[in-house]
Image (cartoon, rainbow, N blue to C red; front, top):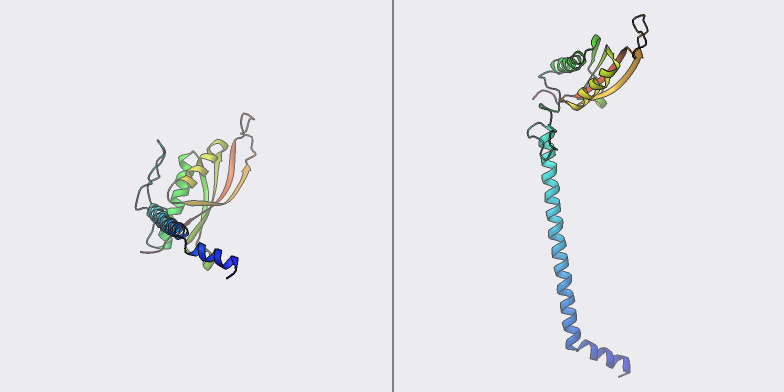
Length: 187
């Protein structure tokens, strides 16, 4: 027997090597078990957070953990209505109400119900109105921050040139505003 074979036999039959191998395997097993348990706990918390967000978006639960003084707007995130026509009327009322609430004058509105599958579930409208410059930002914020969730698709702003503007301020603006919202359909 050569020297390397004798030293290998001595190492493999040593009780110290056996004990160290046993302790190393035990530590490895504990590490795998603890990391698996921590992964399961993380997945469970992600599932709970996703479920809470889904409930909030569907309007079933209030938002938790909001800042002091910050309130979640009441209502559903989707346009309500038994038919697409009723949901479209809700959208028109929401936009016209916001414009008149901040002192604007609605000139015209047009509802667009898409027939293409790419925009299925979304109802769009275009409104033309006149409003002071300071109130335009308030209207846009009111539309985007309130319920149901509305999206500004188009915004075209022109100043009205007439003899009434004396140079004190920017005066009234003529605004063409495209807004869309999602409708879930009849339930």
